[in-house]
Image (cartoon, rainbow, N blue to C red):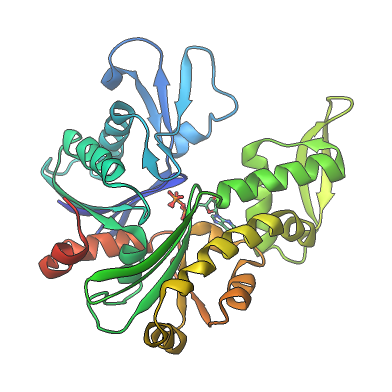
Length: 328
Ligand SMILES: Nc1ncnc2c1ncn2[C@@H]1O[C@H](COP(=O)(O)OP(=O)(O)OP(=O)(O)O)[C@@H](O)[C@H]1O
């Protein structure tokens, strides 16, 4: 089985070059205390995420990645095994894969992910920078001579990379991204509406503000004074205001990538526009602020959440591309 894997801080997507997306669920593992790691897995993905914030005693919810990188090899291996089991139920065990990695991750961090993947039974496995994989997933050929620039805003990290002809010319990474925007929304609701909301409520509110722009949005939480459950009404414009400092900060970091590009490279990006991918790029105000700060046109990907896994799956069959951009 040949797979493209986007193991993100927030979501994991597994794609097959011909069959398309096989698995797309939150990066969460539910473990039972005691026993061996393998026997301890109770749930993975949506089933595990449903118990975040309400995990019964004896069980623990684990997020295997922090800021896009593996922090504990054993947990990452256990998680990948559980994901593969879910993604490929009933299929042959032989798995080859290309796996997306943050463009700003160190060789050691990439090695940790590759080792975890190999130990989970994925062989051979090649690491590919997420912005490059995302570009391929959107139909861009990173072997072209023309320079392409991609901005990827995920849960734990936001990155930008400019590349052409098999090499990365410049990149920037911000460790403030979608999760930080969620925390900003929770803080805003607490301060302005005196309501304490959990991470899941705050994230849902952030996402709904982009889709239900006519609002108002009703959110449930606990009154900060009485501790009693209550509802509050929040306008989408308030959510945009809450996330604005994080958006400004992320855009500020990513925009400096242009400083490292020669005029000809900037002209290429100007002609084509900057491709924007990743779930948090859909937050209200992000694309407009990015366009304003870069002074370049931006294009939103059609499938911002799955294009990295799709591109990784497609890259698997292109030896020249993997030799140029991949790491194994
Ligand atoms: N429609 C939306 N509007 C705003 N934010 C969204 C939307 N959909 C998803 N998000 C946010 O996008 C983030 C997840 O994006 P994505 O799945 O691309 O990240 P990831 O690959 O898991 O993370 P990373 O790249 O940091 O490892 C979360 O913070 C989520 O709340």
